[in-house]
Length: 67
Image (tube, rainbow, N blue to C red; front, side, top):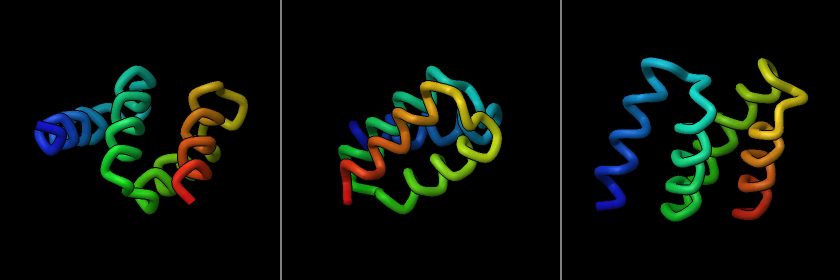
């Protein structure tokens, strides 16, 4: 079931990469699956495009949580 959720949120991100509601859900799924490299990529893109956004800080925190 978690793999289906991952696939769905990943498809949504492919269509609209900066859908913040979806990013939060996708990030939580990545934490559950312990996919730190994907969270790192997501956080890097957010830092580049939205450096002062709370979602960016949340995703960065999730990355450091997994380390």
